[in-house]
Image 1 (cartoon, chains in turn orange, purple):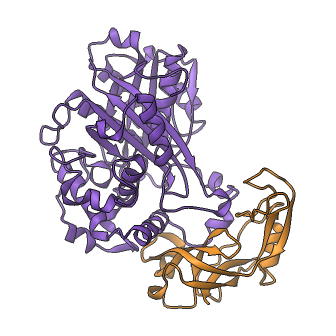
Image 2: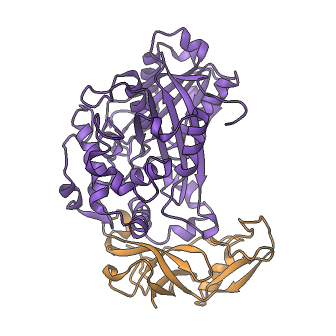
Image 3: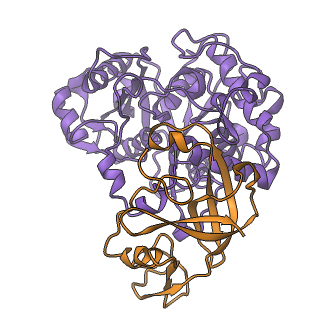
Length: 139
Length: 391
């Protein structure tokens, strides 16, 4: 396996683009920034320069709380490829307090204890190239 | 119902499933050609009769453009619609519409793949890694079983579904597969064997997952005029529905599938309801796929899928709703990691009365096939096809 982050999980480098650079720059400073629609207040996930609800291209970035709850989770025990040695690990959707449900991992705890409805807090797992991955740990 | 209906205007004249499950000595185009020849022979037609060709992401190169050349077809109509494993039902819908509009007389749809012996599955990795969502989903150890497990875990949380109930789906499929000499897995399994098989991604065990097989299949759809000239039993397409469900800007709902929209569209076009259906082919990449799809198509109330599949409801021929009598993707075949094609083929067998005698549904008049593509409840293409017996 390639490098591991402080969480103990792989930290594959993301591919920022013109629409998502601000998100990734913020993660490098341990902050979660999200785009909110200026016209309908919808918080858009994944980050992009358009509102999927109303079609507006006017959005403003804001710093989110980093708090959320587990919407669904699974302990992945068998997986081929570069994640094989990381198993068992928790793959999850976390519902952010600001609304979006995001794909992530729950780290810093016994995988067997993670459950739907559990309050969690963002942690930022740095990749070798600067941006950090948005993961969560029990609050 | 749409103002112009396809109801009964297109018929499935040819259906062919490749008997192979491991094909190390064939190229991908060869398998496409073999299934094309098989379906055309089944219909009593030849390659020169085909005027429309349909393929999805499993077709190599330029897709339909490359395959039309390889096969030596002369086409005035092609369609490369890609919705993963459901694509072949979407193709059938598109072919039926093109036939109803008078653009097409003989449509050929093919599927082929070698995920078992040929290395990588379909779908260019470069294409997926450049998707706008890629960096927000692919950095976390997402896997196909993991994605479906997230839907299963949520369904269990909301509705109290159990692993034993999911296992009933596999048990029914295995009961059917014992009669299919081509099935990749032919042993009947019990609920205990399913829930004690190794956990892959909670709550999905190894036996909750479909098989990985080489192979393929093909369909030939024809106009009423062409059907009338053939000796073969042709199966009319009565209703079709497609829906795309996605993550809705992060407001993803993991406990429902796109079948809740594609199903009503297909039933409305056919002028039928779930209670009218004698046999169903339900995409079964995983046991949870079947359970959620049955709910969303309206065969039981939302959340009641676990109870519905218990006590042998899905087992042919005597169950309340016989399903996947070939053994499905869970036991028989999941060629190219795409199960939609074989769903339609077994439904055609049932309507023709050509399923194995042990699983043939008596007086099978109306059948439904449903395809699921992409990842369950996250970013998926759902397609429903309702077919009748006729001729």
